[in-house]
Image (cartoon, helix red, strand yellow):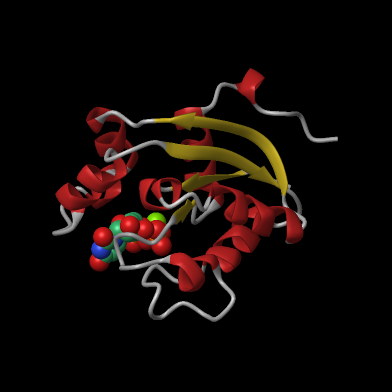
Length: 140
Ligand code: UDP
Ligand code: MG
């Protein structure tokens, strides 16, 4: 029953897709345990994506992720990590399955609308990166 971190990226906030993305999360039966709207600083974005610092897309990714506000979400529920990744779809929207959020709304491999933690270790790190314990609803 671990929590995972979800981010609605600046492209989606700019396009006013926040409501539709949260609707998908609710329809899937996942649980919102924390949420905030924030504009990431370059330092935060660089640290958050530090695992990618040697990738060719790193600088562009940091610029994109700091280009406007994001919605940060703590998402819970049974198998939340896998279920949120499945609902998001593959990194490249063109390769993502039909009915996934990235397939429906993503416009490029970079501007792919949402983020989700990819393992229990990553989820623990990423949730803690943005949320204090007292900002997360306890499990019922
Ligand atoms: N990304 C990119 N170009 C690539 C691969 C990834 O711009 O070739 C961006 C994209 O926004 C992606 C993020 O970097 O969501 C992190 O990449 P990762 O491989 O971790 O994909 P994810 O876990 O988000 O599916
Ligand atoms: Mg990733």
